[in-house]
Image 1 (cartoon, rainbow, N blue to C red):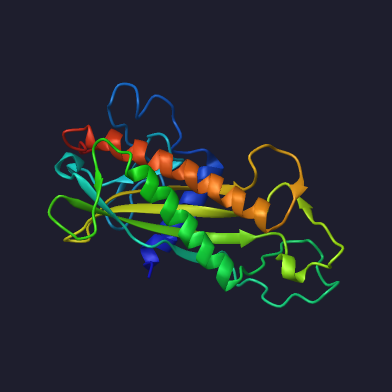
Image 2: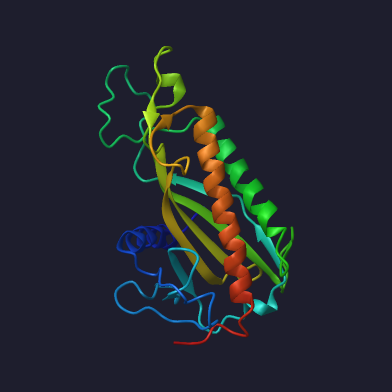
Length: 244
């Protein structure tokens, strides 16, 4: 169950991504230094500070944290929540195409959770600095993952006419919030994320169906997983996250 702080942080991630804040180049991969952002929403109620750091649109860290002390990660099951209550029983012919948010079926939701775990477990297993773990420990991080503000912009195939093909440039959007916590204390050391459309990445319109839509979701999760591994490896390389 995600906390109220996680929801608020997810909203902040959306705002930061839209404003282009927290995406400065040369701040996480070049000189290895940490540059802190200033201004509104630069510090969370939990004491995390926003830094200018790639590869995610927004990254918050706990000053003084030593990720170099950790050598393993536990991956929690991802939580999923909608931006607003979705339409579960759309009436035929009533879809006006404006500001729609459709509900995923229970099977689609289960598949999304499965795709997420497969992508992140596979990529984290490739890390040279972390191993996958199943039990908490003094050198184990817990990765809590949350998909918040999910919107599904196209009706599920079960609600489409048999002879209908829906074309879309994006089947929706979601915000990812990832929190790296100490597995024993639950203290959040790093929180990062961004909002991204669910698309095939090629631009233009494509036929919306279970195959293309699940492929777009898998592609997005694969990309996020690669960047999480890169993010953790970069932060672990620091002796300590310096204080502002």
